[in-house]
Image 1 (tube, rainbow, N blue to C red):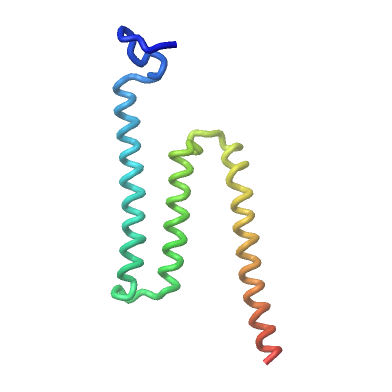
Image 2: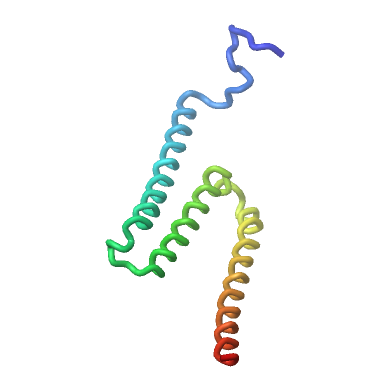
Length: 121
């Protein structure tokens, strides 16, 4: 099938020019939101000592902002926001359970290693 000049892009266009303009506006909005979050992360990483905040606060802020960015990317670029609730839960719940499982092991192993260190020395 060849491209014909009298019907340009007939098979590639699925929306009107107005809808395309809305889609591009939405993409730029997503870009600016992600850029703002990334800028906050970078500035916090550079100036955290000058701001007088603790390293634990910086780490938790990085984790929270990274989760926010990941959620935003998955919901917008992977179109998860537009899916049914059961599909969202099918995709998200296993990762949440894995994260909780890993947190459980981090806390229990941390306590266990501290107990063993006190017992051995």
